[in-house]
Image 1 (cartoon, rainbow, N blue to C red):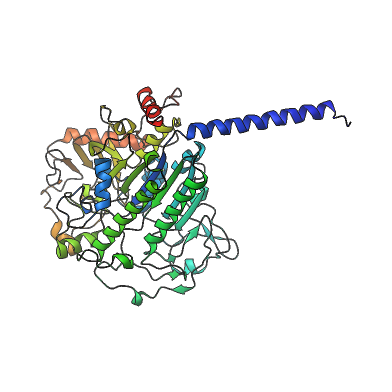
Image 2 (cartoon, rainbow, N blue to C red):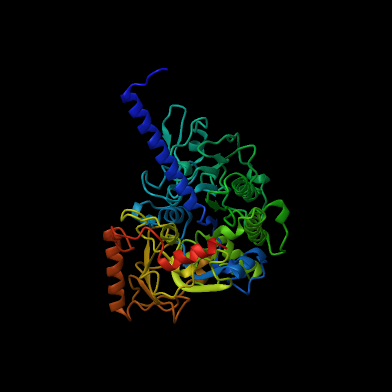
Length: 541
C-alpha cells in the first residue's frame, strides 16, 4: 500500500473541504434562488404614453396584449424615463445612476464607444448574476461597444468609414457580456437607424456586413426616414429585426424551462419598435389601416404577447415578474405625422415629445405583472423612474447596495405588494440629450432652462406647438402639475421661493453625485419582514 505524506494528506483534505464548502454555498444559493421570481424587463423604444389603449382610451390602434397585461397587472401612471433619449436611459436603467453624471452628451452611433458603463460599476445584470440568476439580453444595446481595426487599434466613432474599418474577427471587449449578461444577441446601436446593420452574438459579429444599404429598396412613407446609409450583413433584414429579437428571447425562455428550471433568470428584451424608421414586419404591414407606424405599434404589442405566451407555455408564468416600459417619449416625426394624418397622439395627454424636458419627453407607459403578488387591474399614482428598477430588485433579492452603486435609485417594492407608504421618491431628476436638467418634487416641476431643453419650437413643423412665453423671458420654468398637467402656465416669477428651493436641491444632487439617500452600513440584507412573509407564502402555493 502506498503511503501518502502527512503534508500532502493535509493539503488534499483541506482542498476537499474547500471544494465541499464551495459546492455547499452554490447549492444554498441555488436553493434560495429557486424561491425567487424570474425577471423579464421589456423595453420598447420611443413608445409614447398615448400609444397604448390602456393609457389612452381614445387610441384606435389595437394593443390587446398590453391591454391584457394591464388588466392582469399594475399600471404606473407617473413613471419616467431617466432621459429623453436612448443611450442615457439605457445607462441609467442598468446602473441606477443618472447618465448626466458621466458627462456624456448625445447618443452613440455606428461603432461608437467605449461603453458608457464604467468598468467595475455594478450593473443590474451583474447584480442578478451575483444573486444566482442566469442573465441574457436580446435587442438594442446602444450604450457603447469598442471594436478594433486590423492593427488592434480601437475604433470608437460613428460614420460609414469607421464601420468599414472594423476587423470583425476581433471581439468587442466592453459589450453586454462584459457588463453582467451571460449571453447577448442584438445590435450595437439603433438596429435600423445606424451605420452598422448586423447582429452581435455575445462579443462578436459572426456574419459581418458586406454591402452598403440600398435605401432606394426600402419602403417609402412618412415614417421611413432616419435610416443612415451604412453597411449591412447578408442575414440582416431591416423589416424583420424585432421578430428576430423575439425568437431569440423565446428560445432563451424555452431553454431555461427545459434545462435550468432550478435557477431563476433575468432577461432584458430591448426592442427596436417603435423607433424610426417604422418598418413593421411583413406580416403586420397594413394591419391597422392607420399607416406603417400604427402597424409597427401592433407588431410591438404582438412581441409582448408572444413573450407572455411563451412564459405560460413553459409553465414559468406564475413565477415571473415582468416589467414593461419605454425608453423615452415618442419621436417628433411620428407624433406630427400621426396627429395630422390619423388623429393619433402618441404624447397624449402631455406637452412635448422625445428630447423635451416637458412630460411628453419622459413620462412613459409602465406596467408590472407578477401573478399572485401584484394585484390585478391596479394602478399607482406615485412617481417612479426607470432607475428605480435597480433598488427595487436589490431589495427583493436582499442585496445590500453600497453608496457608490445605484446612486439615483429608490425601491418601489412595497408598492408591488399593495402596501401604503409615503412617496417612494422625495424628488425626481430629469435630463435631456443636451444635458438640460429638471427636477420634480410632488406637484412642482422646475426646469433649469428655457424652452424644451431638446427640440427647437422656434420654427419648422414644431412652431405651431409652441406656447407664448412671458414678456420677461425668465431663465427657467416652474409648473404645478396638479393644477396644470399640460405645463402651460410658467409660474417661475410667481413663486421665486419654490424656484430657489428646487434649484438648491438640484445643486445639492449634482454636487453630491446622488439623489438617493446615503445607505447605512447596517442596511438590511433581506426584504422587509412583511414582504418576505408574503413571498414565502406565495412560494408554498
